[in-house]
Length: 173
Length: 435
Image (cartoon, rainbow over all chains, first blue to last red; front, side):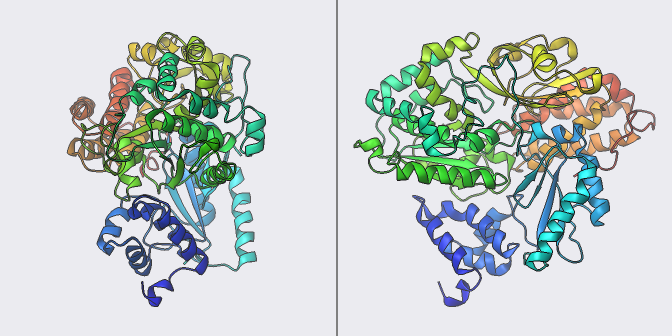
């Protein structure tokens, strides 16, 4: 592994990924979580991320891409700093999931897979997130918000907008 | 934070530590935790498997295979290492029970994994959680670290000569990975495409070694089976359906939630008494009894016991225990469309009947719901679904086709009401309902 490739990740993430590859009987088992953890930091799976993951696992970049394209949480373009994922699957749909999704579209002015101009938010309509009994539910990055109605939407967005301002706005990338 | 619910009819076995702070290891120990694992360590594999067989515990993932029997299929001698794999890729729409187990009682999953390992002679267990459950994975990882620190995991568990390690794993978004062979592929760092069976995982599984794969709820139930004794556990449920089940009731009910009820509990009572009936006093139109892949039941079909055999006899499946209640203001065509949109999105594309079938069903239902359907489409939808059944390597094809067949057969009239250029009579989400 060259110094050049090691610049993609922070030292903290690099250490976490070193520990990850060490924990399995077979190194390649680290691939799927490694891609997700890398994406959490970098914002998406850039060419540089793919290249470093390939080196770390010891497989080709093509192999990494072949696996990465299978998983719906992995993406190849930047999302917003806060990725809003609205479930509209059956249990959420029955309790107003589409209405919640519609309200997010109106408030953010973007549609499915859109990113706001300031890079703070992106929006996705997603499949079941395992919160069916507390529907309708959404995830913002990994945080769950449940038992929602469209009226909750502006407050949720204001909360994350405030956090983005405090942290310095912009995309994860 | 997911709300916990309660009802006097509940028999709390698996959920007895929910809301008690048992994610902390000292609290779990105070509440009697890890006593079952210690007992199993002393008693040995044959005793464990006999208790599990006597318990009548059947797989909580959906297939309902007897757990004790599954464990007994693993060869005693093996040149390759054996593994226990816990399936926490909870993704079946309508299902959120494992969510609560990981949140409130992660040590029960660890303890169950240790016991499964002792039963089959494995030294390593994997606990795989879906990628969306990051906060739950963090809870699980903290619990695993605490169990190592206490010496309950590691080279000499509970001070014995026996070794057992647990490795946690995150997915990254894929319903298909909930299928056992696809789960192993994903854990090996590959696309989650199913394997051809046989060989079955008990013989050739993870990394080619004999592997037991159990649903997270099944594994979390194991320590309770040991604590109560297999025979006592079996008496809680109905014949050949031991114990309780975490039923997730969602949709149009007054009090949705995860309720622990004995196997065989009456479905009608579950909806009207336990979950408070249909929301807003509306009429009941239909019930999906065990997650989105299980065929729909009509109101006149719900006076049945909720166990694998009785729901099967009623023409559906107990599945994951996710009961989705649908009121009379809901468009069944839209519900069918949302269901098939999910399976179309999640089909891995490996088997053509599933890849093409889900896509064409979605296209047909989209057009139909928008008011551009023709009478022959109704038969075509049924024909397409029938031709997917039993023609794929894994059950995803069946899981997509079965509910659609149910909707078309039981609600044909409602499909016909969409004919003749008429838009959906319920006039909701016509364009939106497409991912």
